[in-house]
Length: 139
Image (cartoon, rainbow, N blue to C red):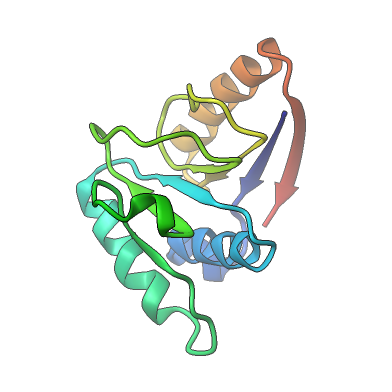
């Protein structure tokens, strides 16, 4: 199990952190990894849903908001709080808490905001306690 923390620093991602989420999702889809994106709230889930269609006109990433009959057939599920979904190998976590399900890899996207950085340190320690291999990436 592995957890990668992506610490946002570049102006492009500072202005719109969800762009980094889209780039990571694009890579995951290209490597054929079924992915869950754990959104912080419904508004963020909907914003991400729109952005995944628009951020790269050459990219087609099959995705939808979780909670539909065909969730199992969709490569990327955006999961607002309160919706249960089966585990997948790759999780992109945008929430304040660590992902509790089973997965091979978790990607944590951390905005440049100091409060976000503090929360990420707590998640880092929790993943460490659980035996994850940890990596930090400055973006």
